[in-house]
Amino acid sequence: MIGTQPTGAINGVQISAVSHEGLSVSINGKPGRLAIITEDGQVIAAGKDVAREAQAVAVNCYRNFLQGKGFLRILSKPIQPGAADAPE
Image (cartoon, helix red, strand yellow):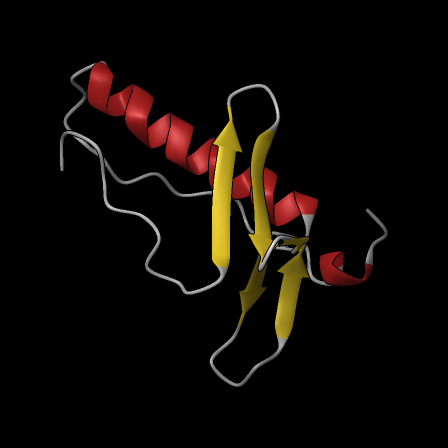
């Protein structure tokens, strides 16, 4: 787990992170959106809110690891239903 993690497993998809910009995704060079989708295909949330939430959880998990805390699991608060319909 420590060290550079392999990336590039999803053909045509690039997920990038910039510390002061957050997460972004592109599909074959065109902008994409991150989404939370249920098993039956319902989009719960999508777009910048999902990207911000995913980055916050990842950063908080990493900070806990660096601080030597005894837990590595970080939970976010629920994203409000209907967020996928909100304009970005």
